[in-house]
Length: 249
Image 1 (spheres, rainbow, N blue to C red):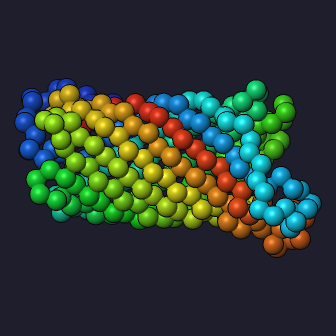
Image 2: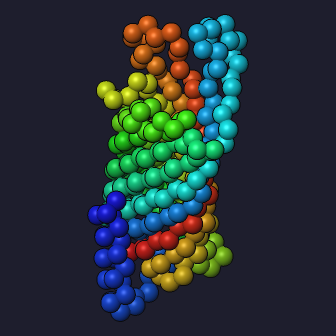
Image 3: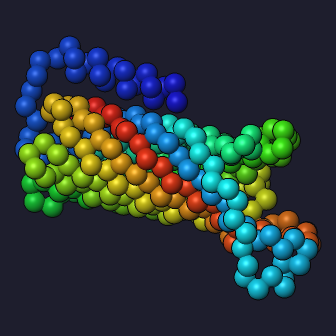
């Protein structure tokens, strides 16, 4: 996080010192962005305990947890279309003293191309590290433990200009995560979109929203060790709204 923030500051300084150069009509492809906003999580889980086999598909719902979310993303696109992408996300949500702390990091390689002179599309494969902690009833994250998992997935999306200096984006990613520090395997899907405005040829501001779902796909405690409560299919939903600032180059 500190290295990415320092890189963002360096790029911004270089643009402020260099003479203004008009960007091509389709705009620059590479960018470094930071965002901040609000996150809302809700946990869906089987509340039948030891009688989960006779639950008949019934699910209980936790309260909605809310709190701040922050993130940074660096996208480098070469002239040949080769794409390198790094992102980091951090969110902490709470409800009456209980809380979730979620952190994730991705590093991807892919390809970006253009449709006409304006719209761009991309696709990439990525590595992901995911960390989720719980803080309930006065027992902190170390007491309740962490879900720590890593894995990979695919991601794709579009960016298109409209109405002079405005642009829109939409992105979708899907991943499968596991690991020796995680009691369960996780399937994650995230959809996000934004509407932005190019203030200058190298600086933009955008507002957007994202929806993410994390589902437990395989409970090692239940399937491998005979644990009596199978958490498979428990789901954590995560919705966020955000404001994003970006430097383009």
